[in-house]
Image 1: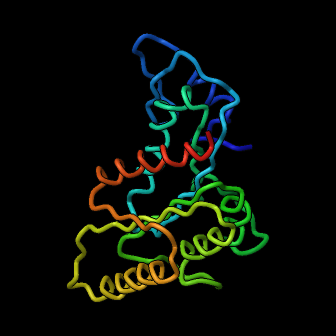
Image 2 (image 1 turned 180 degrees about the vertical axis):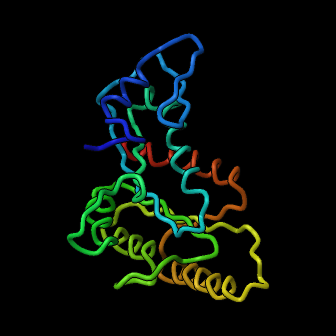
Image 3 (image 1 turned 120 degrees about the vertical axis):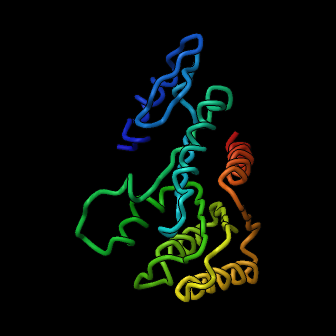
Length: 208
């Protein structure tokens, strides 16, 4: 069953459909303003959120989707469904973990949003990192891949940080050299939020 923050899609829609003059309800740990109307036939756009473990903005991307849904779904008939392996994956010993994430969560998605800061991530058997494996696999499907690189300052005196950051810089250069499309950057969570709102509006137009 597809869920949003542990709720089934039908329950999520039902919650959004409730209305009150100015009241607010909680969906999991997320505050969702109640709206007067909500159509249950909204087009769902599943978005896989990929990043190494050092990127704190994973939750920000998920929360930005929730905010967009609350503000726009009832008008535009589109709802974004965030897919994160740590929330949506289930225990299964039949094969390597990354392979199962790819098949069960990544492949069915419509869009991939990837974020990097000072690391490329943990290596897998087939790629430099799980995140890079996800990007490479998804890019081959010709679906939309959205790359964001964080430009917060690093602690350059730490040798390990230098080594890992060099891998990220190399990745950025490779993405440019293979013409991977438009790559975006952000310096603060606030600037990322602005870019995400613009991104979600752009994606929504493709499905309207």
